[in-house]
Image (cartoon, rainbow, N blue to C red; front, side):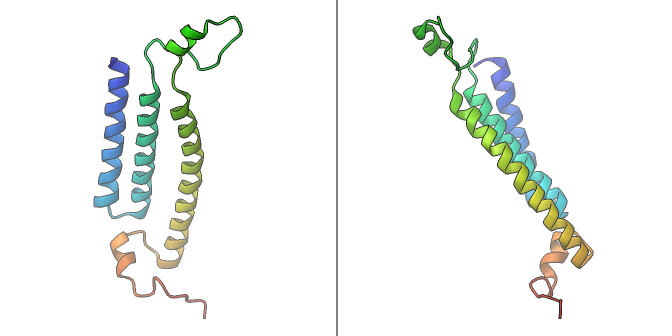
Length: 128
């Protein structure tokens, strides 16, 4: 395994561990959302690292290109397509989670997860 790929895999693992620690141990809702984003970014980096091929070429078959050479050196296109889709979905869900945290703060005046979970009016509608 090449040093670049090994470094990318270690960075992906570190991102996922930091995100998991943030989700489990931090009390602030926004910090938990950032931790979830770290996990998603770590998974994306893991997928890109798995699709990496040393001395690889782009996976576009050009005219006058030897097919056997192309098949032997082309990188894998599936991980890159999955990551592109995951980035779009992750950005959308991140925006929705942050918008919901703004609504939580306006309604309850805090972003502490323990206070929000112990709040009796969390599930009630106070528009009466």
